[in-house]
Length: 254
Length: 254
Image 1 (tube, each protein chain N blue to C red):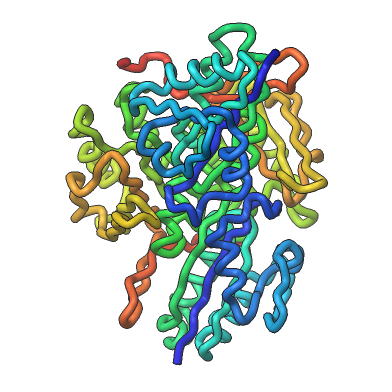
Image 2 (tube, helix red, strand yellow; image 1 turned 180 degrees about the vertical axis):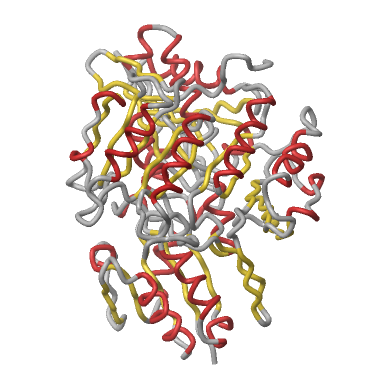
């Protein structure tokens, strides 16, 4: 008998951004799996088992959750932000694709959430107001040359760029190199937004420009938005500036 | 005395995906502004005024909401999905940038929500599991040549592509042309997902391949995800197939 697996996005981590659908799915589970700090953000319920694992073990965590579900349990896998964006949903699909035949019989539900780029963008205005892309800067899973090619293609074509996984102890120089690549395609004044822990007590948001950006101000949990050449700042008396990308471009028909 | 304006993302439209933060912001408002069908999805509260407007009037709607807020009211502007993604947050910033000086004094909050591409992706697996971009196919606000250039840059560089505003009565041929451009860069078997009204009674999700895609199956409210060359289908006995993009690419270091 096959059980079910819900891969649940808890958003940026403030309970106010957890959807009712995600809260219900968490509550209905017999067992929760997840990266420790994400599990800590989820209310506990009596009788519900918790299996915390390390950040680096996505594949093993997905397999453990699928194995448990294939034995008939209702299992939930807790994901930060949205599970479909550089998070657990793809790791689960990879395991289903490669793993035990029984895992294909598990009823799988992915519960979407507010991903980091939406939360950070909301805090400063509307930097993603025009075409944009999301790139993981981690070269653990793809070659660095591919990342550079994508950064240059995106900046050259006028996309606003959201950078996930910008830096870590094992990847100290990549973010600086990425900004170097982007400077070849974008004006020095292009707005850059750093945001982390949106809606949590340790929230941090900073706005700078591409020529003055400091890669060491980012950490593993920082989401970075690099504007396009059209992204603008609005100064406001007594309020922080707004960053936005206009919906229309020069040369538009309308 | 300046009031406040909250630009609120209500997600795909099912109350189960409305965040508590968005629900509280809706409840706190003296007046709601929005496109009629979005307003209809929001619970009404006694004493709260409602100002519905047409789909095409984003600029005028944003200006009306700012004007009302600048008179001291607590105003909420209701946006489908996430307000920062091809929705009302950028329209509001544009009005603040160009409009009355008093509008800069309005306390502005953008409340993020689950945008359509996350909701559609969740329904089918994890098609956005690797680097991806979001492109509005509307050439009302940018030239069609720019859209084609972006489609080709994105497909050529290996991004999964989410298409917003794919088709309308006034824009009948653009989606077909977009698929033609994409076929020049992607395998015929590339998975394509059409999704609309996720979580609502009229939800529709369909999976096809790039060579067999039918543009006329889309409408204004459809969100389309076009895979990269790495996006895969998983067949499952007795369950719909999964679509996902692996996190790692051939040639990755790890």
